[in-house]
Image (cartoon, rainbow over all chains, first blue to last red; front, side):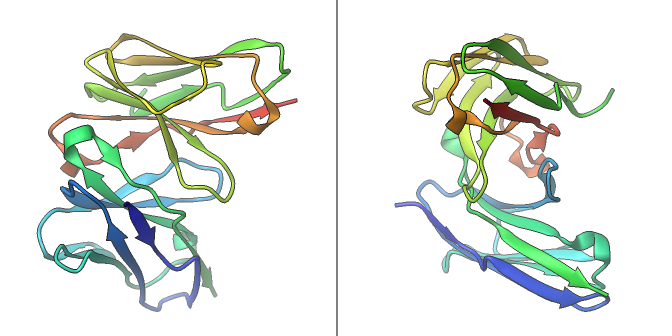
Length: 110
Length: 114
């Protein structure tokens, strides 16, 4: 079957580093997306990992291990505006399907 | 205008009304999507259009009727909805074969059925 597992909620302090983990089971896996969604707004694209390893993009980095069905999003130098939901979404390219979970709600405290 | 634009932002309709949601993308993408987002539930894919042809219909009730007149525009026609259809409806677009650029979402239409 298809399944995504992320923590429901996390909290961290401004300026800190936080790692949001995601494990998944899916068929036809091509890659994995991370999206950020502020309350009441559209999801916005953060990263897309195809190969194993870490990809860094400014304060955000994303890691993928295809063999373990595991990914994480690393947020450095947290800012208050980073308070949002973070959605891990495996992608099956043959049918254009993203598999969505409930995401992780991150709260950043001053 | 840039990105993906959805109108209206908010919509309240009665169960006997007919209304339409509109989506327009200015990114030159060739695939467009309708998603439903309800509280405490994952994003649900409703319809996929690729090159203006519907390629996916995820067992959506017939009271939702999509229309894609060209690669830049997507509509969702609504009629005789139920209160449980109240949700955030998101439109997205992408370029087939280039997932590394991601899916671009519109700001959504917050629909309330009374």
